[in-house]
Length: 192
Image 1 (cartoon, one colour):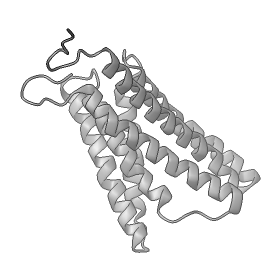
Image 2 (tube, helix red, strand yellow):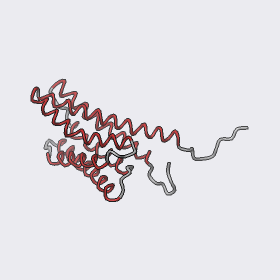
Image 3 (cartoon, helix red, strand yellow):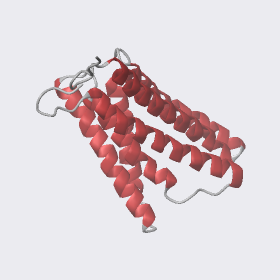
Image 4 (cartoon, one colour):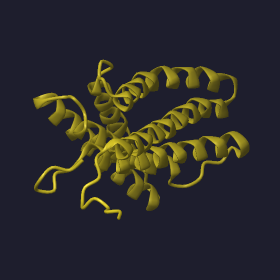
């Protein structure tokens, strides 16, 4: 529900955050599935995902219970993830992937997700924290699986992509629920 002056509302930020999380997750799912099935990575799919993850992180940080410096840091990490994601995507598009952009985006994303905290009363924020906690162990498991077959590394990317898609769904359902309980603004309908 909006307050005077056109303030941004929690539900209104959950829409772009949810859509971005779902798109980023879908990109990783498509990438992982393509590599598992064919051994070939589709162009730009992996590099584009951090941009969407950063948008989702920024929306979550802005709607979080964090205050002061922690909120500012989480928003900054979200924006850094977006910026580094754009650089990674552009450099991939021109054929010269700049590895530090992907690394910076990944580290900023993990730090931002962990900053959201597991004690939040918000389900989307807690779930996002769990994604942050899951990233490094998932990559370790993926690394171990890749020792068996290089393509098996993608199982962890596939799992993380599905988690991001799930987070997107949670955020979008939050908007639907909020819309259902918010009072309607405007004139009441009259019946004779």
